Image (cartoon, rainbow, N blue to C red):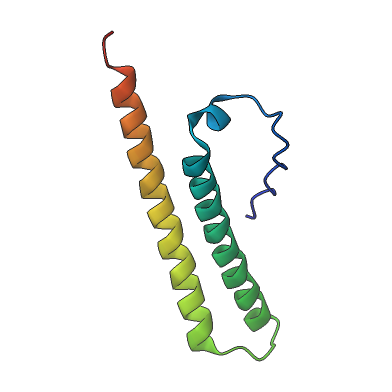
Length: 93
């Protein structure tokens, strides 16, 4: 399922993401977009194969595996970030 395009950055956005640090946010957004692109590419190759178009099966399988691996890595990164966030919430001031 493709992700919606990121909203344009016009400097008027408010919220914790823009205040957290632009380089980190930009890095994470870029990585999510890379994973999305890999997934879309793999989906397109599978669709071409299913419709009978000429597709190299090895390239298609490699693209699907790359997209799967990238998604799993992104999911683990999210899990680690959520763990860190919960740990920070537990800190007593």
